[in-house]
Length: 314
Image (cartoon, rainbow, N blue to C red; front, side):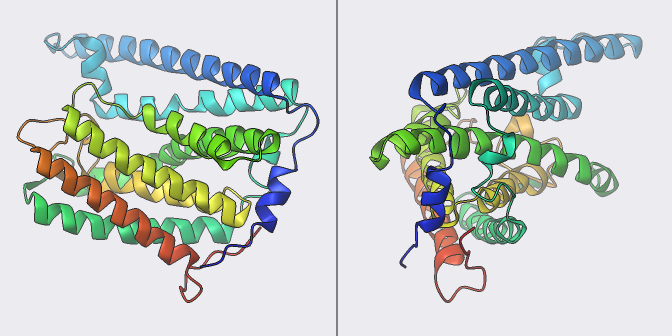
């Protein structure tokens, strides 16, 4: 596979002269500030409403504490996803007031999201995610029907898709556009503009509830997937495919088969939670291998010349 990087070069050169390293650091700080503020606002406000509503229904206070009880509830999951709006707000402020550019400059040199790229990225990852679930079932066949009814699942389907897109698109806009584009404009060495956003993105997925081995395998899988998302931006010069791929990955966990006990309220099926006990080091190695294989299959589906899902440049 030979990748024509002309589209990415247009994307790399698109920032104006205000995209300096100090301004990039300032803009990143602004984004983090708005992200934290939005998270605190929805967390505290949502927990308050949750506690009041539970008290009015005569429900005893949860032993785990009101915040934790709220976060694992269906309302808490929806609210947590809504908090990612803070990233988009922070990016708008940073682009407008720090860099003097429109927010649309982050999605590609054309300043339009590639609809075809989005749909192909979504389709490819839904396919490879289902394949990885088959391999994970072979490794650990403990799958149970989720608590949500089919009618409720259908009712929440559209809100979950919309909020999951809000979450995944904000992360892509920050890590695969704002940081990647700005760093690539200042540094020619890909070790800087590829690895730094990938490492930051991966580090955010560390789970204190999981064992060291499971954390390591999950972080390896996520880092590999982040590299694939970066490769999609490099091949297309547009965020469309990365938007679709990231959304497909998260929707599989939110709506189909959940591997996290704290985020399984809307999943049709629940697998053995990764943060739970009973996983061996060998299990962790196999899980990481499955994640890497799934990511490589995604690359083949989206970049191989003979693939019906092959992406084109922006």
